[in-house]
Image (cartoon, rainbow, N blue to C red; front, side, top):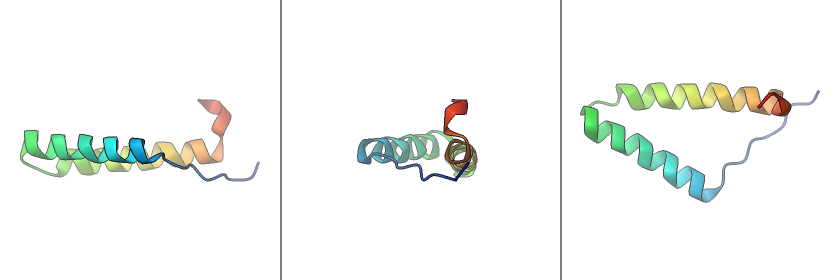
Length: 54
């Protein structure tokens, strides 16, 4: 199966940035936000490769 592109809506992108900013403020560190970015990126790649698994 061909790999597809996952396109985030503008609202989803704004909300994701807001979530990352919230965790930076709450933890006073970027460590958890970086972990969330990594997990989201991995999951997005899986969705692009096999969109019907979710």
